[in-house]
Structure formats: structure tokens, C-alpha cells
Length: 226
Image 1 (spheres, rainbow, N blue to C red):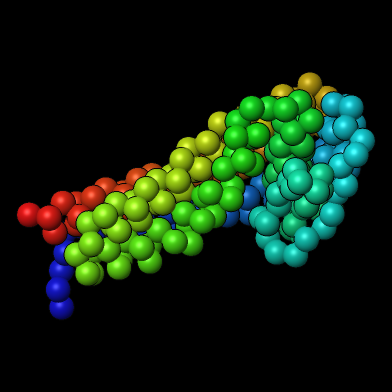
Image 2 (image 1 turned 120 degrees about the horizontal axis):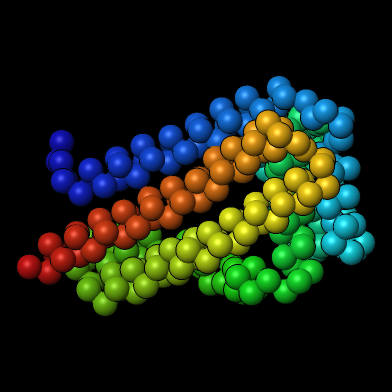
């Protein structure tokens, strides 16, 4: 079996992604067992946070799955997963507050969020086409085709890079409101912060993994041109 030393980069990226994913799930599961002293549900907390920011035109919907929570700016819908929606746990309230932070970003025309929304179509095309184009370019020795694939893959990395400030800012907004409104207090707020920090690290891990993949592609491309 042929061994390419650049596989090491793939393995490193895979391990980092697995650790980040396991960490966010274990942290969420841990604080899912900690019930908030005020007994608020995640859905009611999200609603209260948005109302406090003057947002009254965003619906909250329940969606299937676990940790599938997201805010859809195009439809103005905040979707909370089954494990979050009606839960009174510190973890669920933290996640719901984070998504409410995205709704506030949207209402306030937060520039990084607008940039991320604008870059979605380009990043989606890059995600679909980059690898087929790169593989074909390398397999048939078409340097220009490989370069096009690399450029397409860079659009994915750019999207991931833009996503970081959006996610970190949403968490900061969420934690600030949760603390100032006393929805969570003391160790409860600390627990929510740990959940959101673990979630944020998955975005960092995803970006780092993509950068390692790009480095591998460049090394293979450079080796083939010699």
C-alpha cells in the first residue's frame, strides 16, 4: 500500500476535529444535567433576550436532532433542536442565548455576519467543486486546473475564517445578557460559558483542519511539478 507522508496532515486534522467534537458533546451533556435555578426553558430565554433587544419579528421553531440549533437570517427564524428547545438546563439556555446573539447581530447589521451571509453561495460552490477539480487536475497533470481547484478550496477557508468572529461575538453577547438579566448566575453562567467555548473551538478546529488540507494539496502540487 502506497504511503504518502502528507497523510500525516490529514491524520492530524482528523484527530483535532474528533477531539473538538467529542469535547463539545461531553461538555453539553455535562451541563445538560445542571438545571437553572430560575427554571427558564431555553425557548423562553431566547425569546426574552430578543425582546430585550427590541426584536419582535423572529420566530422560534423546534427542529429535530441534537445540537442542530441555528439562526436563519433569510427567514428570520431561530431554530432550536429537540435537546435544547424545552430544556431548562444551563447548557440548553446557553445554546439558545447564543443563537439569539445571531438574531441581534442581524438586527444590528453586524458587518461580519453580513459578510458571512454574502459569502455562503461562493463557499458552497467551492465546497462542491474544489475537490473534484483538484483531483482531476493532479491525476491528469493539469496544473491550471489544479490551481482553480485550490482557489475554490480557499473560498471555503475564507468562509470559515469569517465565521470565527461571528460565532465568538454571538457568544459574548449571549453571556453578557444572561449575566446582566440574572437568567443564569454564578456557576450556572460559568457552565454556559464552558459550553459555548467548547462549541466555538469546533469552528477553530474546522478552520485548522482545512488549512492542513490546503497545505497537503500545495505539497502534492509542488511535488508533481518537479
